Image 1 (cartoon, rainbow, N blue to C red):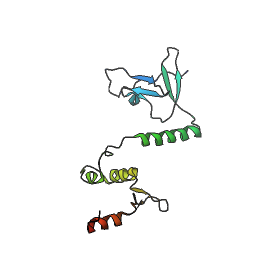
Image 2: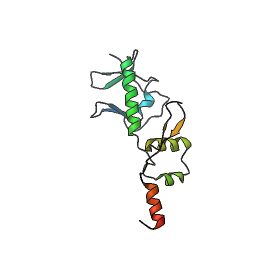
Image 3: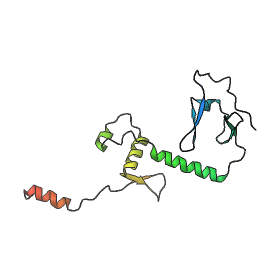
Length: 147
């Protein structure tokens, strides 16, 4: 059985204990910056020692299914990320000074105002938001005083 990971002496020590918790979704959540004490690896084999402590060992072999699963989880997490400007109208969004171009286009894309150009990847294309039938006729009736 693998030895538990020891803390790196070059890392600052914290007064609170480093803990890991098994969540309701069977995920291991690491508390209190414990990732600073882990080796530089993306995947770990998870085991449990005789005292019931979680032991993480860098994985030697990762199956392709694990990479596909991780990519799917990343997509789900990105979709669930809260949008900080979702409550603003487009006019109010224009007045936000600290908004970068990437954030601006990402917000417009998430609202459905613009979409990715599938014919020329990397370019954005504009698509109509809505078409209101009879809008011109309604406007002309108002101008004539009929409405």
